[in-house]
Image: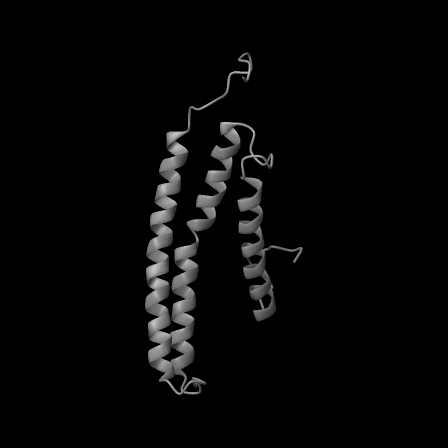
Length: 132
């Protein structure tokens, strides 16, 4: 996926590709922020990274809620089925409820990330101090 224009074009394939990209980016960040990997050098690097992460997590509640509404609308159309024999409407409602919980957790995560960034807002490193 080279074009990340949020206005589209949109398709199920591009949406799935964006989800995979989100997963890949989170994995890259896990490795890049390991102590000896060199992905962070100064507190300012962490400050910026935290800002970018909370910008992303700040959008997750809306995405979760929209997916939940989509699933409920699909079930309400009357053509949905569940391969396990369960009520598709009930399964969609259950998924929407879990997605609402995820939206709430993402909001709490965003708030905690913003607080972490605020906490390190003045942090720096003196270049004239020898590492021992």
